Image (cartoon, rainbow, N blue to C red; front, side, top):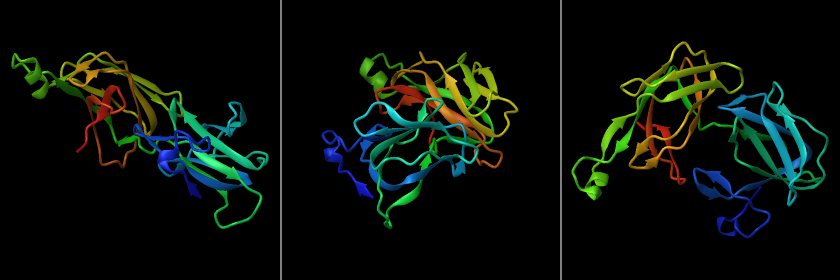
Length: 243
């Protein structure tokens, strides 16, 4: 396995930035066999229904495209020797791009299965309920001081949807006068929580928010306190507040 230096990412055609947050991280080159199996997991569990595309280096047309099966894997005809990028996407959320080199020789670094994680950064909770809040300028009468000393606010009347990431289940709700929301009786599963933007805060105007939510009965969390804040990527959206 080789790692491409970060300083060379912009110039090398053999290195493509891997986005983590908003920072470009170097891709690792995985040496794989020609009959490699691709396994897609979410929080350690294989997941079906995930789109996988493989592109040969410097080629915009995929040489392979498929949907993962029940075991979370895809098998395909042997790939020709060379270097490829593997893209995994579902519901608009992408797994980190993988960079592989198909080799014909045997070796301890050559793998026959490549594990790819989709949305392992998702939020986990036993109940889908919480509060929409944020910070707005204070009321000192001085514009600069209003920004330096913001005050907390809540966001009522926000339409929200919760859609199954791997099912047709869909729920709707609206935050109440206290900014609170609840999706009652949501069965365990993986969901996409969505809401439109337009809310104001000291961080800017909110854009549309979409977050992957894992509803798990055993989760120690029972609420989603969502704060409107700067994503660090030039946008503003609701994110679960840190403890």
